Image 1 (spheres, rainbow, N blue to C red):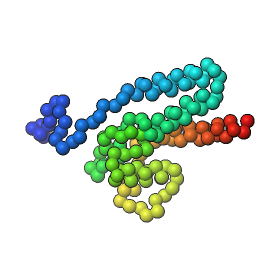
Image 2: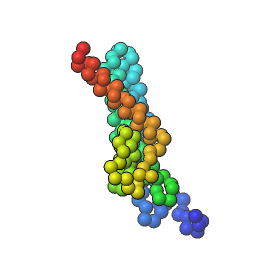
Image 3: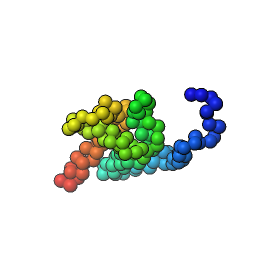
Image 4: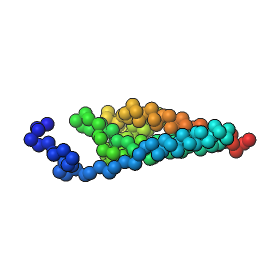
Length: 148
């Protein structure tokens, strides 16, 4: 980059929107820890299951993250998003959806130019697989709770 074109420190670049300040993630993790302690204290597997449900929902829908879709220049998009399932705009969401479907084992019906770039970042992959496994545990626990 040309140093003459660099923006002044503390100012947003022209044409770029200003990023919102994110809430502290520690609030969410305090709730998760409190639920875990309460589940152990009361020996309630149902309360533990509720904590896992809340964590899975947080990872899928609410965690402050970045888009991370690869651009044509080979860089990851750094726009903020809410939830690991979402991207910053429509074309990036299409790419992320394709990567999520491939993760689930479904091949694209008509491969397009996005297939090569439709990959999940390793951190997102680990968190999504863990949350999906947690969802399976929640479903199994719910069925067990209904039967017994």
